[in-house]
Length: 213
Image (cartoon, rainbow, N blue to C red; front, side, top):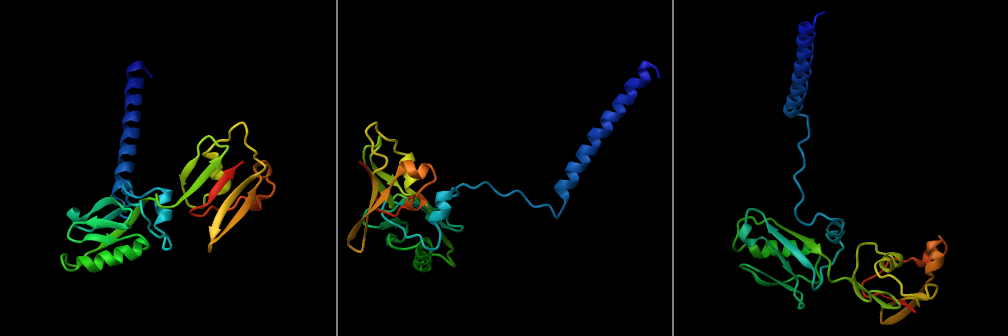
């Protein structure tokens, strides 16, 4: 086969492969059974948001909410829960939010909006859980309030703080107040990181104080 024939044969093979790929891509695009790509998530999509919008999450002061009213952009807003537990919305003015779950608040807003909007469809998403906090004290590099993430353990909150050189990591404890009574729950950091006494690595609750002596 001479050089000219080899050139045309290579060109035809390349053209055939390109046409086949284009055909396959076009067929996939037109396949009625193909699942469309999911739209990008824009609001309240992280793990914290998902957890905070579970049926049992109770909204608190300083949380941030995204209130969406379908086909009503003027009534859709992202706003904080004020220290008095209320939010402010167009038409409705002040509405109590703290103490309710997102679903309960959405139902309340739906009822209120029926005076102004035909068949309102309201969704409430907690985008920031600022009302639930734990506290770090003692020989850590970062003391103070820490936002409580879902299923946060003692070991996890300590990982955000860092120990000072004087920290007694065997004598750490959690102060928890329940029903007016304060309990002192021990936590031996050195043992837990070795896989020992794992029962001490408890789930933290709002208001817990972790003390590193």
